[in-house]
Amino acid sequence: MILFVTGTGTDVGKTYVAERILRRWRDTGHQPVGIKPIETDCTPDPKDAQLLASVSKEDFTSHPGFFRAPEPLAPLATSVDANWDSIVSACRGFAQRPLLVEGAGGPLVPVTEEHFVIDLAAELSASVLLVAANRLGVLSYTYTAVESIRARGLSIAAIVLNDMGIANDTNDTNDTNADVSIASNPTLIRNALGLPVYEVGELSALADALIQTQPAP
Image (cartoon, rainbow, N blue to C red; front, side):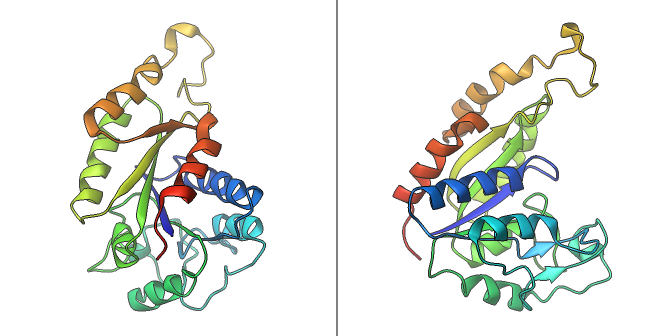
């Protein structure tokens, strides 16, 4: 199986969710590989890729086919030219084991002039897991991301709503400023999209469901 983890944007908790799923798979007797083949803001190391490698118990972060750039920018905007074919080929080389691939940013982050991040999931025929920050605005972000994923004929396994402790973006502890959308967002997204919606406290159950239901490559 190949699971592609993407998000509604940057800093929504993709790596946290990916790491938790990988740990659950290992704890239940599987030998998964977790990779982040495209990573920027590597100053000097690809921190997200290193975390996934530590859980996988194997370090693939320096694979020559992967893309790394020092600037915190979309790959296309960095000083490094991405070799799309090399990225795809490198990822396919790990597909003999349960494979989790974490994308960079959101689905439509440009990697080359012709390719977005989500196109990597299409190349790998991967099932997609979408991570979104559970806060005001997540409905539009999620619906937009789902449209871009479905437009490529990809299957979306589930959506994870990550509260990330951000019920209040202002960091004000006054209850009157709390984000009241958090309670209703899961139901609204589930009803609108017809997809399973999980919260971070349910990641073990999600990981079990994914490993049991996804086909082998």
